[in-house]
Length: 259
Length: 259
DNA sequence: ACATAAATCCCTAAAAATGAGATTATTGTT
DNA sequence: AACAATAATCTCATTTTTAGGGATTTATGT
Image 1 (cartoon, each protein chain N blue to C red):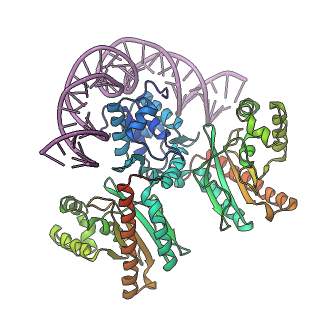
Image 2: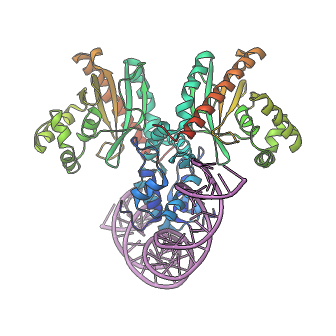
Image 3: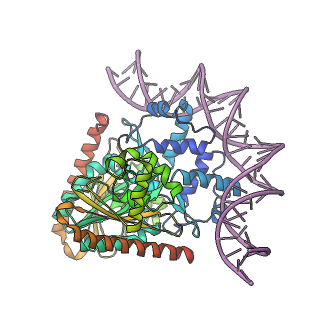
């Protein structure tokens, strides 16, 4: 089904790709169907992946992701410069406002929350650590898109034109592009209830060393808690956090990784 | 260095194995040395793993684990029956006592915390989610070992004889075995400062369907907060939690996975 | 004990992996 | 800005795996 011809590592890893929020469990039969692998081949892959701890099979049920994932996640939290440098800024933000603060990383056409802190009991924001977020809507997505170079940006706009139009960013690619230019000039993005109804998102980009942002720092806060002035104040802090994290990242870069 | 001959999936996945808490970052050069792969081969693997999001490379630094790990961890949290069923029991325990409550899973010769809750500000216990725990010491390890069948147990005792002796479980394999039998009869394990000084651990096994426990539920609590009676009380709750989680797991098993 | 389904084994043609060495990017330096 | 040093990629012939049909074994349920 998928065309992963000729590369047994890739073919094996493709199995990990089929797990998603709506499909947390797969039987060998289903995997054969989905991936088009023959029975013995599939079983060979599954065996290897299970031995590596990446998959886990419980008798009656099918296969799920395995405990090695938990271990790797722990290691990642200890090694990801973005998380390590960003955490304290998230703390600052949640201490100052009744909000959820997120670090969202861009990778391979997606954006993904990698760290979050919150100072409100019932978080209306529905994107905990690890859940991929929509690309076409929300302050975070926009704070990343707006700062991309035109070459990367235009195709992305085209891909998400429908969403972008529906939130009123413009009806043509050029109009959207212009809207995003304004976001870029402002240095941050604000969204009112685009992702979660009633929740305001305020996001600013984080840079690594290059021209394109690698991540976004974002505050989500209940709409009824804030007015225009509050948003101005918060966004100043969010931008500041974005700048400081960026600086920390590029410093680390220069000196080579430290410790 | 490692003998992973003839299996490119295995060889590729072996790269993920070298990441550890003391070694969060690897350069290609180091990986070649460690794994004994040729330069082009290694780079091919790295490319594939990076494309899959499992690795991430930042220019100046080497390779680290990648964002896909975060995503998979999110999915795992949503699909692991142990976590799903156990979470509320952890909550119960932390609400009742000023403690940290853990779920620890056994896999491939290791034990690994997969979920934790805490009701104390500064957690003395040093094993957050994802960090592999020592096998030879601590209530958790013992609550898992004690319930293994002799065949599996004896070699494990031998492997960890040094630790086991140092905590006073016995000087010979037979003596340790007898001590563990007593733990089994009691139905739970208690440890005083074996893993973290000043911290008491109380753990009970969790079963899946078979004879050997698949996990352990554990409470760690500051030693100065508890006396003998408290420990009796807590351990009753911990055992109860273990039983209830086990029951939930085997029910799910019988009916096939539900959700 | 028996039937049914699930997982593994066996095998060889066909395809992919491998690595030495050359080549090309990338980065840092004067 | 040219250059040196390093890092990453490419080429290609050879060797090694891989893949998958079909048979077989093992597990599972009745």
